[in-house]
Length: 329
Image (cartoon, rainbow, N blue to C red; front, side):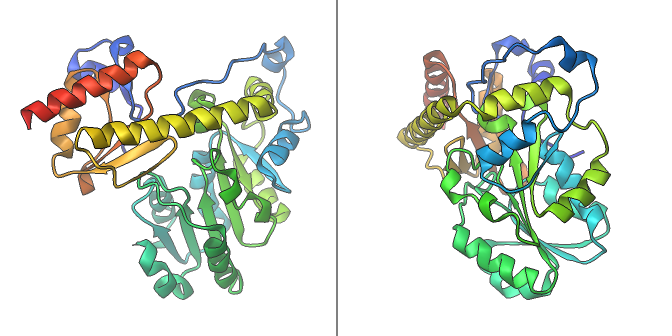
């Protein structure tokens, strides 16, 4: 399996620091989990049903005509390759590594391309996968540009798959409202913005026929009854959405300024994380880990992703550690 952030227990064992003593900035999640509503007993006792209002709440929240609930968008990433025959897939990279891995495992020819290469290769591809905003670079592409790519692909029966896992803070840039078009598939993650990654919930937005085919691959009861209750409550909390967006934006700007102030100029990021390329990435990661601060290390391109701290104590802890590192450099 590929490496990901959030391996807190592994870090606790490796560094001999108890789990509750860590500042975990490795996952790019909003550090303010949504309040958990009371879960009625029947949600635990009965098999979940898909006409309980979750899909309607998601459709209204995302502004999409058709949605399919899945047990985290990772499930959709792994299943989508089953819906096509073999072909050539482009993945705008670097990005979330599971995309390229899923298509490769399914027997497709995968080419990882950079932003400036897409137009050159697009007409030779059957599928293009884009993470927008990108993880970990934070690159954000305009809806118009993405829709132009979709048009070129769809004319040949191709797909544009857009993973919008970090889009909730900037919904005006989403392609959700266009996802009813044939050949356009939008993935949305629930856990990152709502700070509840452990519930494992995500949504696929696409035209009805494709969602039906994907639902057959997902199988019945993929999303648990309690998760469906929780998901509805969160998706319908419009006042909460406004507050969460505001504090994510504020914290993202604060994190950028903090890193810059200590001599670490981020090369990218979004409201939920900042991305730093440095030849000393492994050294900085190790330095922080020894002090109970977990970052996401990308060893292949010597970079680090910093998630958002929560409390003022957490902010001070990060700033103190950065200052201490600078003294050793």
